[in-house]
Length: 373
Image (cartoon, rainbow, N blue to C red; front, top):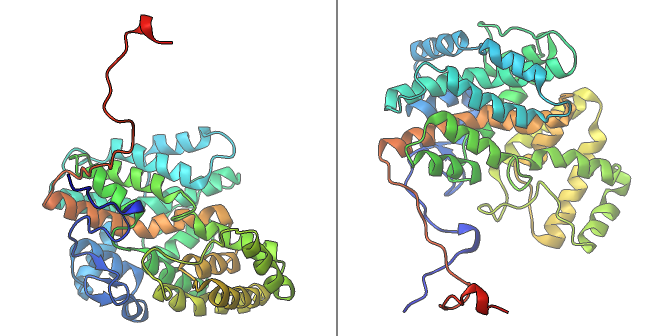
């Protein structure tokens, strides 16, 4: 019998068809390169594109804004649950719980038709930033700031988080990062969501599972580790010696390398200029200088290049966002990609059920209990 082909981690395995995005020849969403999108479109337009298949007209965008803004509210029992969570609950864990709870209150929770899923996706797009900001402020002992209906996605999130309007530079930088995080083909969290809904489970269950997958440091959690690395390096004067010593100890340098991109992540190059501009505004240029040194050493010694998490962690730090918020912000963007894939999966569903390559004992017979020694 021929042994089936096995690829550890499913590397290179084609697990399905998708029209949502591709990483071939650089990342594109529904045919549009991410560089083109970040230059000419807001995240709100990109969210519409991912969910509805085309970039919106001005009228469609206005209507989309209105629908999303109207949904920027949480069920009252969820706010009570946030207040009762154990001290030290991580923001991403609180968000995972929140999405599950919101499924109980969504009026179309049990309807998995195409249009109902799109409506639920728009509501989750609206609710996730509210959940992140509300939990954050409750934990800090601060009053929750109600969402505003006149602000775009990035601007409204920063307003709810801080209690005051953000600068245009901060809004633009966050907006670009959301666009770059919005979708990435069959990554771990997206594949998890597709596997879940392939059983004919619901959108909220798929997104809850996706957030669970995102928590791991080999996926979304990596952006939270970036500042740990830079702080450990101590600044540009020590960066080269530190990273060489870390490599000698065979430590993993988070924010570098990618399963798909072997010669560098185009998203990292786009966001780097925003991270540097934010550092200039915040007076934290030394971390950008240290990052440049680490990048050079990693390229020379390991032939590894930054992925999106590397500049994103630095950008959010320069914007004075607390580290535990970084991965929830990733989720705030990726809900668009997750939902687009859930809709696509359910529109033409087949249960995802791969095989395992057995490596256990050969066939054998059971010895009765009394005869076992």
